[in-house]
Amino acid sequence: MPCSKPVIPKNRPFSCGDNSHKFPYVEVWGPDGLPRRFAPGTRSSFAVDRFNKQLVDAVKPVVCVEACKDGEDPIEFGPEAELIAPCSWDLRVVQEAPFAPIAAGYKIPNGELTYLDDDGKLQKHVVYDLVRNKKVIFFGVPGAFTPTCSVKHVPGFIERAAEIKDKGIVEIVCITVNDPWVVKEWEKTYYPTTMTTTKNEDEHLKFLCDGSAKYTKALGLELDLFERGMGVRSRRYCLLIDDLFVKIANIEEGGALQMSTAKQIMEDLDSGKGY
Image (cartoon, rainbow, N blue to C red):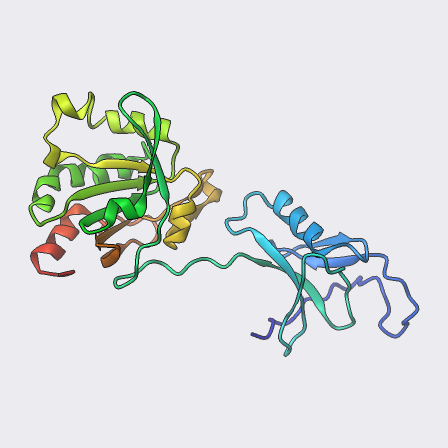
């Protein structure tokens, strides 16, 4: 696609009419809308690395540099290509494209989610092993111990877990972008001791962790909360998965809690949606 109209700084340090002029530097525009200066001949991969180290709060990493001119298709620099700034072209970075949000009819992406077992040992679940040949609900929350998640979202699923499982759902999985140690302590606020001594299996949720938001990004459901000091988190969502395929995708916008609740998925199941 053609670039948007380039922004050429007034103090551009070379004259387009003088081919013998040596450019004192090359400017590359970053995702923050500001240029960084590099020596002529700098490798593209060096510039990409610099942007990623300087812009640690960026949700999507920089992947390459491209030359951009209004009305022309962008030209991508390879990793070893030297940065140059031809007249009337600007250089800008390209960030990793986000995945489209998961939707009904899509095959769920595979991945790994972690948890601590009752002995405090770190374990992993492969997503496809969780959902193959069965009906499973995944619901996502922005974070453990956050008020809406802790007081409303999770308790709603615990209260209606038996009803939901009566509809043929084998497992209800809560996925959060936190480390397993935090999530284990959060789980204990709902299940103070081990399952074997206190809880009916039908009332139990499985709490799994996506600490780096890698799987959340694969679902296309990451949420940028950097301005609130929380980094990359997850949107609230509820997915009904039947043998690897999403049958229902209830995904919230912003901080809402309406579509992804246990109440809503029960209404969907009662109406026959997803079957």
